[in-house]
Length: 262
Image (cartoon, rainbow, N blue to C red; front, side, top):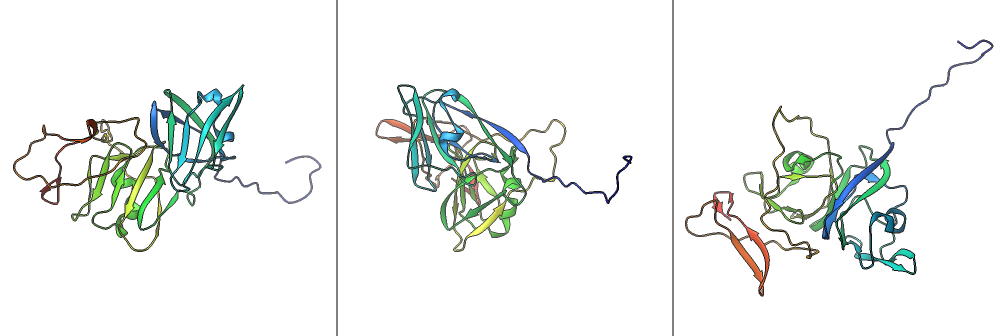
């Protein structure tokens, strides 16, 4: 007790949210990115500067807002110029950089309620809102009860489809901090999906499965998915190559989905 103090104690309560910094690695070319913090200021000019390594012509695009901004450096006056004035941590962004770099995103740590994305019918751009990599099954556990055959999730270089067996099948094995995703929902209604930290812990020596990526095109901002059935016998060493004209656009390996080789 304090001598001379008279009165009732006052309870001090701390909020869940605290300051946090997320580091994101950017490869040269196009990257699909997201952040799992809530920036204090969310405009590109407040978040990213020339000190980070951005150069003339670098781009940041928001597919959900149909907006973009370009980094401009004129006589030492560095700024992002364009229609994208505010970023959104619930959605992924596409960033083009002319050289490899790492960026830091400062913000408040997300509350449980903020770790939620909305999925509409058709294509959606979503962020990954956890701070640790998680298997695709665990990351999308809250969506499982409303998932439909043919739903699709894709990173820039890998893809998975929800099968008739009730599993995510494909080259995309996990979701990782800093990466952004495209999600196709077949359902007619919109749903909200929460990211919950998985209760299961990897056993000693067990590692999270890596995505199966045979080809990366850093100069392409987007991609497409073709699902085809392969007739005849296949083996794990075979690959299917797709070209746009003479330019290699993608490589796929045979995968068993619902008893078919796709």
